[in-house]
Length: 141
Image (spheres, rainbow, N blue to C red):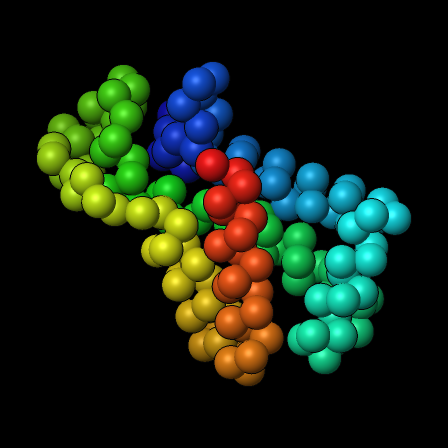
């Protein structure tokens, strides 16, 4: 089995992280098309000084990455699934993960860095998205 499918995103019921991320991006896209959320997209596009047409695919991409911090070994080590044991045996996950690790903080920092370094986003739009992501992660649990 491919390790991308072995990383967990949700425990009960089990859902691979990659599937959770893809689902989140697809749900984001579906919600953006509703009247309630199109208003939010309009406000966000003004705040970020970005056309809605250009912002929508970015939002879908970014929301799909909202839990990327869950791929970190310290997060993966929090569960006792059979494949987590296998990853520990291979030395890919520490036997005693750092208990205070927060996937939300790691993930939002990683996305902020990605948007600025790889995609050339300015500080203001990248930080705006980072703050929105933190809110989304709080709501997602």
